[in-house]
Image (spheres, rainbow, N blue to C red):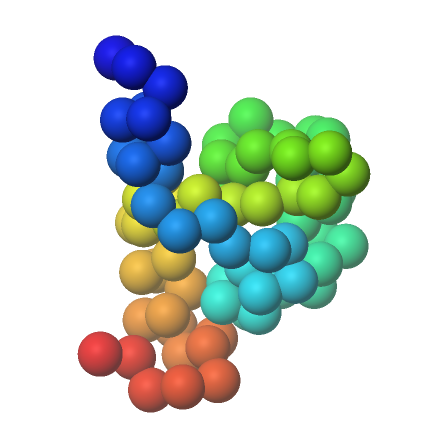
Length: 75
């Protein structure tokens, strides 16, 4: 797999604060999960920024949206 196709497979990169909002947790909870959980959301670090790729976390995001944790209406 070449580098371009790998990054295309990740989908949109979601900032930590937005990911926390989508999942209905505090940003501090995501930070704790990054250090202590192996089953938490997939993340990448770009410099000091923590980003969450959309595609590897699709099931987790769908579960969060179904629980009504998002400010909008789930589709």
